[in-house]
Amino acid sequence: MLERRGFGFNTQNTIVSIVFLVLAFFALFWIARSIFTILSWLAPIFLIFTLIINYRIVLNYGKWLWNLLQNNTLMGILASILTVVGFPVVCFLLFGRALLYRKAKELEKAYGEETYGNYTEYEIIDEEPLELKQIEKEARKDEDPYRGLFEN
Image (cartoon, rainbow, N blue to C red; front, side, top):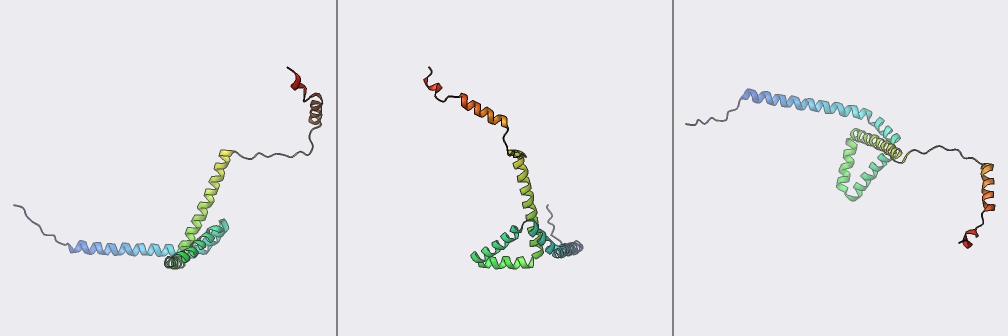
């Protein structure tokens, strides 16, 4: 005959699991708060470096927020509030975008040099050599433009 066992709770394992879960969430919250605090101190530095590397990234972000406010007001307000609240994170992301953009430009330049070659340096010489001028004059004197027309 089959025995049917009931589903029983072990209260010790349940309490230990809940305590461990609470401690894990507390540790994650503490780590996130520490990272956000560090980013909040570094945010102005990130913003200044982003403006130095490529100011258009900050301008494009502002234009994006403005267009979002005009086209979808509710999402624009929400994005603006999140930008103000998450200012350190936004500055860090804009800084990362500026670094990626700069690296992409460097790779594009290296690819262009590899594909099309480098420009060669040259010097502009004001005077043509005298020998070439004399050779050209002699060639013009000897050549008769109509000679080839009447010969068979």
